[in-house]
Picture 1 (cartoon, one colour):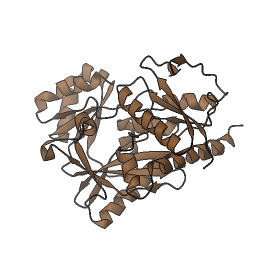
Picture 2 (cartoon, helix red, strand yellow):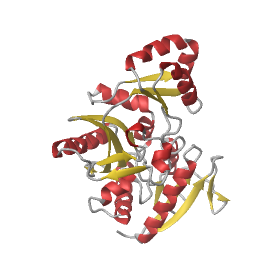
Picture 3 (cartoon, helix red, strand yellow):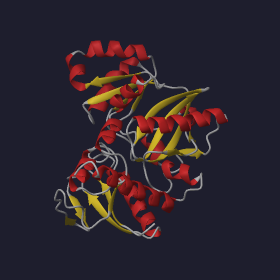
Length: 333
């Protein structure tokens, strides 16, 4: 495609700051290999946007530092939750990925699961727990969670990269696990554990999205382990098998559900949908609107296995961003 000027956003205010910088650095290098001019804009932990140490001034409606398109390689709150997407909408600049509503919805694991439950998508059982409700009547909340059985996973509802997640095998440990989640968020989600295989599927597109082949996550710790922060980001912590070791009909069901989930959530550009596979049953776990984006991250590796290289993937995402911005512009005059 025609070379573009791309501003790559990295860092951010969330606990995923360093992970985001790794994604942004990889995206910038990939864009340059694809022939584009890429500039890294680092959003500090203080929320200030800087280019080579120079603070940037953002003015609504004026675009963004002579960039044709923005790639927000940001993870977690203030980056993947619709906040930055809202800023980019105000600037009136094309950007890669989901819009404000889809970003906010998918970042909130409770709301996302509520939506999926409403349309009958199979999932593990779960409960949302608000900090203020737990503090007001902890015994009632814990009694309600008993229906999930054990083990359960307790997570901050609006965080990523497995930050703040606790696996609970003893009900006496639930209060501590909820306390850990509430250190990161005022809303926690408690999920029943699935004995199934963990499978991930990447999605690419706007109106007619396509799905990659599913990949199966194998942990170095074996069945005793679980997909925590260390497993995700430590060398050798996990192995990805592509395609997943599933019957063809189940793999195709995963791909179908990945696209269906992407569309129902109102996503655009890209996403990674995570599943549990229990026999022939396919359970949707969550959807990440801006998954890790280094060349060795799951999202890129799944499409690479299907013949789409990292630079080509970036090219397609830029084209999708421009397409979406052009279409929306027709309704905003």
